[in-house]
Length: 278
Image (cartoon, rainbow, N blue to C red):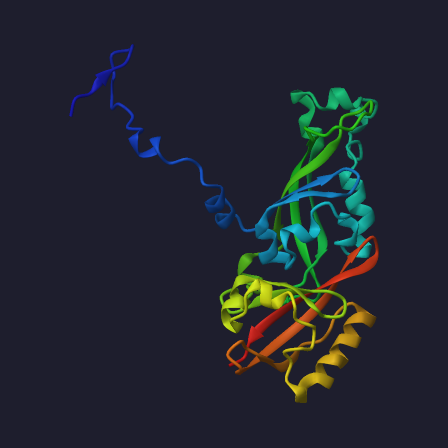
């Protein structure tokens, strides 16, 4: 093979970049490789953005939490610490105590805005105790593109969120068989994920007209109603097993747990996690 000489006369092989010419960075591959998800939290405590992969870790659909208060998603004992982490000047060293925001945003000082902490987030998956501790690492930065008129630019924490602890010790949900559904407070169906629709055979338009109890086996109605009352009182129902009618008229046994999701401190909707039993 022909070898080129550099300016010092030494031999080197020309770099072959053809393998990379047509391989743009795939965001979906990046999210799959990341043991967690990305999230942007404004310094006022709003979830500005979260990648869709959050659903696999917390059970919330991306659209359910964006523009919601993050303080309603974390354990009550962790809210004060999270608020402190979101304040840009909470961790300034004594020698930088009087530094202004514009100065701390300079490249030489950006290390003062780095954050690394853990917090317990509400989790809808049934392999947790209701909360999952996340390791949050990132940096407070300017949130561009906001039409907010103020002397100081809007700030947000740009962070990678990963389950806290060795992956080998974490219970991994059986994603290939579990499916989720979203309901109104009376359990009327709002939506169901693709796995559920394939298993039960219903389309979105058919599910949209379903009441909360319409497809439950008659002998299981009282059982489901009791779990529904527990859900409304405590915010979560225990694990129940019952029969659900498929589009073909068959009875599919499901194991289900449900949790309330709050908005402005009031119950807003229900997320249910289901596992087919047979």
